[in-house]
Image (cartoon, rainbow, N blue to C red; front, side, top):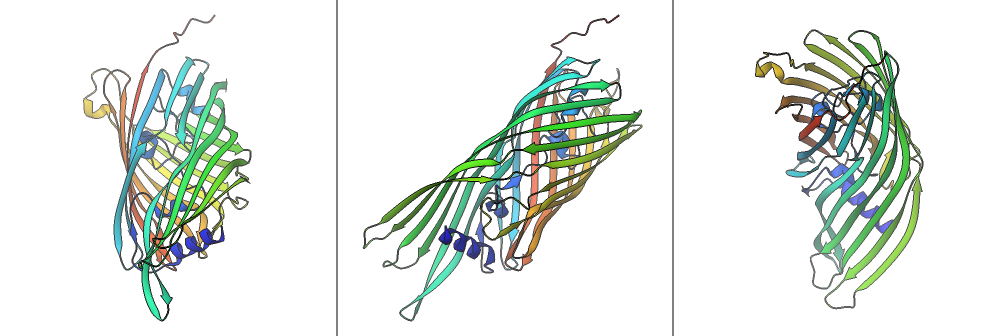
Amino acid sequence: MKKTLFLLFLLTASSTCLHAQGGSTYTMFGIGDLRNTLGSSYDGLGGTQIAVPSDYAINFVNPAAWGIVKTTRFQGGFRFNQQSVSNGSSTIGQNNGKLEGIAAIFSIDTSLGIAASFGFYPYSSVNYSLTTPTSIVANGNTIGGEIDASGLGGVTAGYIGGGFKIVDNLSFGIAAVGLFGKTGSIIETIVYSSEAFISINQRNDNFKGSGFKAGLLYTPIEDLKFGVAMSSYAALHGTSELRYSTISSTEKSSDTIITQEFSTPMPTSIGIGASYKSGKFLFALDGEMQDFSSFNYRPGKANFRSAQRLSFGISRLASFAPGTAFGDRIAFNIGGGFNQLYYTLNGTGINEYFGSFGMQIPVGGTAMLDCAATVGTRGATGNGLVQELFGRFSVTIGIGETWFKPFIRE
C-alpha cells in the first residue's frame, strides 16, 4: 500500500513531460468523477434541473418532478468526452465515450401527479491512462524509466421510486437507491535496463451501498417554481484485491496478493433550485452541496472536502400548438456554472468552470432527440498539477406513449 501511495505522489507531483489518454487524469482520486447531470436535456442547461420539470425528460436529481411527465417514457443515451491536458510544458489530447444511464418513467395519474420511475445511471466514473518519466542512479550511472498508470470503472446507481402531488401546487418524490460497481487500477514501474525488475501494482475494488433520494417541487404562483432535492446514503462498503508483482528476465518473478475489506462514510447531498417562465423563455438556478470531509476511501495525495456546485440555465421553450413551424418546435438551451470538486491536491483545490448549449428536437409523436455540448476547464498548471480543457458531448433519445388512460372523477 505504501508503494502505491508513493507512486501516486510521483504521478501528481511530477512536473516533467506527461503523456495521457483515456479520461480525466483527476479521476484517479476518490471514486472518480461524480456525475452531476444525466441526459442531454439538462446537460444543455448546465445541469440545472432541481426546479425544472419536463414533459419529455426524466429528472434524475429531483423525483418530485416525475409527476409532470404526461406519458410513459423510456430514455437512454451516449456521452463522448474530449480533453486537452497540460502540465505547463507539454499538452496531450485524450478522449473516451460511454453509454449514459437508462431509465423508464410511468405516468399513472396525470391529475394527481402520480408517477413511478426506475433505472440505472453512472454515479461516478474512473477512466485515466498516463505515463510519467522517471530515473534512478545505480553505480554512478543514471538509468531512465517510466511509470505507467491506468484506471477504469466506477460506481453505478440503480433506483426505483415514485412521486405524487401533496396538494395542487406541491409535489413530493422519493426513491430507493442501490450503489454497486467495480474499479481497477494498475501502476507499472519500468527501468530501461535488462538487469532491472519491472514492478506492477494492481488494485481491483468492488463496491456496494444503499440510500435514498427525495425531493419537493413547489409552485407558489403560476410560472414560478422552487425545488429542494437531497440524497442520503449508508456507508459504502467493498473489498479490495491488491496484487504486487515483479518481473525480471534474469531472476524468478514474485507475486503477492492481499485481499482486504474497506468502508467509508458517504455524504448526504442537498440542493435547492428555482425556475421562472416568462413568455417563450425559462430561467433557472441551482445550488448543491455534498460534504466529503469524512470520506476516507484511498485518500493518497488527495484531501477530501465539501463538493459544491452552482449552475444556471436559460431555455427558449418549444411550442407544439397546431400549425407551429418546425423551428419553433425545437427547444434551445444554454447554461453554465462552477463546480468545486470534492478534493484538494498539493494543498490546491481542484475546481471546474463550464458553459453549455443544447437542443431538444422532436422526431415524431412524443419522441425526442436531445443533444448538448459542454465546454470548460478544470485544475491548473503549476504546483505539480495539470490543467484540463474539456468538451463533453451527449445525445439522449426519449420515447413515450400513453399507457394509463385518465378517467372522469366526480
